[in-house]
Image 1 (cartoon, rainbow, N blue to C red):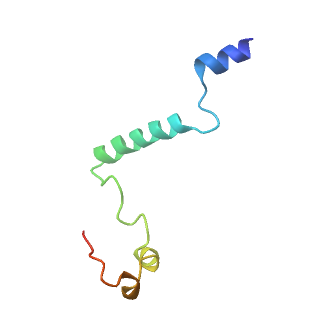
Image 2: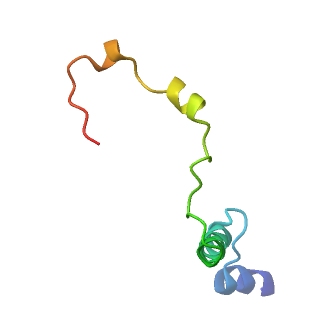
Length: 67
């Protein structure tokens, strides 16, 4: 009975960890703002690796690209 009450009332964040991840994200945002850092580093993804996943000019053909 106590285990059922614990699961129903306290709703642990296991196994998904969604609430934990949200708390960590907020803490990281606060830390980066205090340090004067950008929220997302431009070096998060290697530009060469990102360029490999972009479509070629032939694949784009006459599609209009909006930035």
